[in-house]
View (cartoon, rainbow, N blue to C red):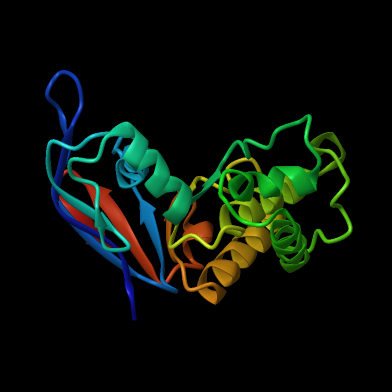
Length: 222
């Protein structure tokens, strides 16, 4: 399988000198979903920010789709994120003044593609997540589960190599969370993306191909 993400010997500390993790290694292939568990304050969200180039590391290397993050300036990191990374957050981050269609179209609007092709991509993606009949709805008209499906569609619509999900079911009831996680896992694998899911939930992690726990000495299985 194609390697989408590689972390080698990554070390990260926080102000005051506490080391969150040291010499962390991780490789994720296309079509693979990895769940990362860990105690509060262990650095799970920080790890996602590091992978996305939103936070710096003390040592080590990060490579996304063959591109090293080392030495890239803010502009280059922004371009890399737009091209290769999709995000799904616990708080959805859906813009309330845009329709479902326009929310999902945002990653494509930042590119240079044809507007008609982009519209077709968005509609197909919304069909894939079961929201093909809600294109003109506004976020206020949607349930929590529907909002998270919009977030998944937005994260996947531009065909990123890497999907990062930070507690994506934290605001959902257990039944809705299970449906959303199944959709997220299926959509990620179907498109050959590498997925990293950070969660406190063992049931959410159950959809993953690998479950790892973040510790100060790195990632351990289980």
